[in-house]
Length: 105
Image (cartoon, rainbow, N blue to C red; front, side, top):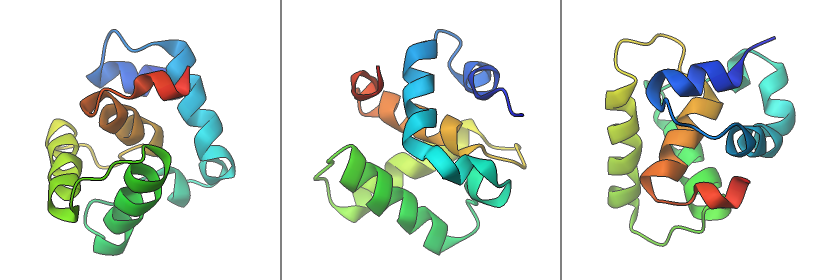
């Protein structure tokens, strides 16, 4: 079993366990399979899913796609050199980037 909180806290040491748990609940069944629990930054379709499914739908962001893609890229830079980018960590960092962690706890 993956320790989602430990992974998030590598990049956000003051991360709140309740908010991390909220993101884990949001991701739900996607975290049960290794492939779907990761975000592939080399796959444009995957990044579009993060933008459209998480940023636009869950966080209700209304910025244009270029601005949202730039936020995803910013998180990608924080995770540079990491081969397995956990979905929970990416989502946490994106929610933090937009100041919307409160949605999760």
